Amino acid sequence: MYAEFFGLKQSPFSIAPDPRYLFMSERHREALAHLLYGLNAGGGFVLLTGEIGAGKTTVCRCFLEQIPANCNIAYILNPKLNAIELLQTICDEFQLPHPAHQSGPETAKDCLDPLNAYLLDSHAAGQNNVLIIDEAQNLSPDVLEQLRLLTNLETSERKLLQIILIGQPELRRMIAQPALEQLAQRIIARFHLGALTEAETAGYIAHRLGVAGLASANPFKKNAMHRVHLLAQGIPRRINLLCDRALLGAYVNSSSTVERRMVDQAAAEVFDDGGPPSATPSQGATTWLQRKSGAGAGLVGTAVAALAAAIALLGWTLWPRPDNTVGTATAVSMSTQPVTNASKTIAPVAQSTVATSQSAPKGTPVAPLPTAPTALSAPVAATTPPVSASKLSAADLTTRFPRPTRDVTDAWRALAPAWKLPASTGDTCQAAERSQIHCFRIKNISLPLIQQLNRPGIITLMDDHKKPVYAVLTGLNDQGASLQMGTVTQTVPLESFTQLWQGDFATFWRVPPGYATKNTTQPKGKTTAKTPPAPRDNAVPGLDWIAVKLAQLNSDPKPTGKATLDAALVAKIRAFQLAHGLKPDGVVGATTFMQINRATGVAEPRLQPR
Image 1: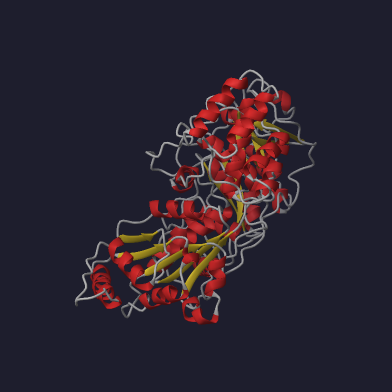
Image 2: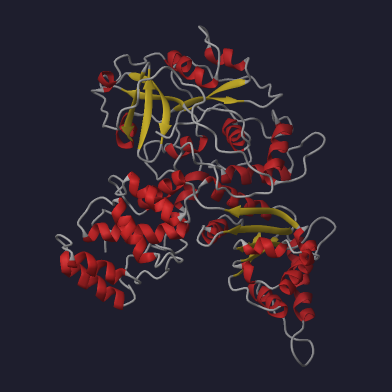
């Protein structure tokens, strides 16, 4: 109903688990990485838990889109089964015949024999087999024990069946029982998907609106988004229900913006007496519209209320739904595709603020991840307070920035204080190497990847005389960018920014101990291509450090001895890259080091929240 009014192509807040709308918060990326890790972990259990509506099923759908061709999947959605029924369902999912060998009821052996033979044959053919059980909190202890026994099917090299359990928080409590100790010991990776932070809630709302086709300003005012977060408690499904009804209320009032009072009224409709939010779109819609029309809803008035009531009686069959024919998950493709000439595409991007990434409440992976990186740990220079975002054109670039930076060397020097680098009159990059900090440049980069890297950097703008001007990018989100030149900081809308920006990005990154490869990026001249990645062999600089850090993130035992770039480590690198917005090619380059630094809490400055 309201989609056309707000310039949307479809309803942005459907509760259907559409992977295109997956908002990849830091926790969602880690959850996806844990599932992907399970594909190459040699068998056992992977456990993904989360609150109701936190996005577990959507993450799983996204995971299914990343399954390689040599992986066979059995997916059980309704696990309220006894042990025999579970075995029968697994055989059915793998399309295995399992007739009873004797007269009478089918036994466990009738299912286990063909399943064991199938797993051995597929292993010999180089295939992996994964069993995914959603809503696994409904499994009984005896069924969980039967699942544990399935992991005993193994060769001398690996277990033949990988089992992924997805469920609500009580699943963790079930597995913690003494009777299931043997199963608990077989869990190779576990992750709890918590609620979104307030900053992530704002990013989530903006992301879904962007995927739905919003081309204008975000209709949700800042105080309205704050209220949404408080009332929805950071749970994505609750956010969807609340935002959907709030947009409907704004539409009925012919308002182009959603205000706090509309959110409060929407909460009264969808959260009924403070209980769990209803999942039925029609519930409460009629009373909302009748109340608004009775009070004078503006231009749409009683006709809209009557139309909504009729639609409600029909089960809201006319409610706009996402086009399910699109098979690519927007949030994932944005993160996983190679960086190409995408700099001029304003894709929906995740919120990068002081409170994003892994700030509480956060997921609980086996190895605790660090707290969110702070904003710029030191000012890039003494700055005037940022002004409100206003359009910036090439003609007024030098007016807004009275002393534009024309020499990129000066821009590197302006960026250096954020990294606590000493002042240098010579080559800034060479001086930085003495502090184990290298320079990095890339000619074509997307805005989402800049937000993924989440660090201040140098960008090139073009003035009205087609001459380059260099600015330090100090803040970026889905609405605008904060730019600094000299002592002046200006905040500009993304539309203005992308019209002037040349698609480049340059920054520093902290190299690990023992990283000896000479930095090939120089600060002088125009921006050049990306620093070549490290070679894919056992001479990769910092490979031991990489192995230790990935083991930390995956809750694996700390590696001993010299690390080698074998298939297992490459698989971990690819999973990490995919989960952190990089091309999952297993090649360890500067951006991979940057993201490992970020995930493991290495001290580096971060973009400000704007």
